[in-house]
Image (cartoon, rainbow, N blue to C red; front, top):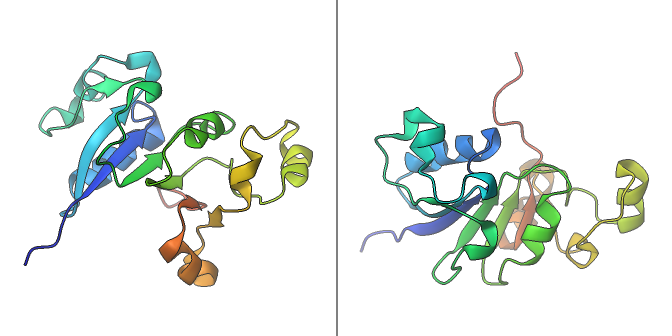
Length: 157
């Protein structure tokens, strides 16, 4: 019996972080890129923005609110800090999410406000988010719906 594929949406695929997620997932044997968003570039092909993607088969960029979440198993959110909150709050509960912004790294809305100088738009999700540091939270990450990813995409050296 073969291993099933995971259908993944990449939110903010037209930005640097999202585009790197596309690059990584396009080469992953179990991942199928099922949706790409880039609100400012909705309706365009990703290869129009990043020519290096001309040879991969990915969906056309769409607005985040236009994604059909039916059949999507996971989402990687590459939106900037403070932009991700609202979008993540609207993703259906069956979708597991990896957020690469700083929006869900703190569990307390008051502490978030202290550090970032703004009110969190999805405070009800903060308590459920798991900080994605596998050395400390491996078991929680395995079953989490929302993982706040602290890892840099490229090594800093």
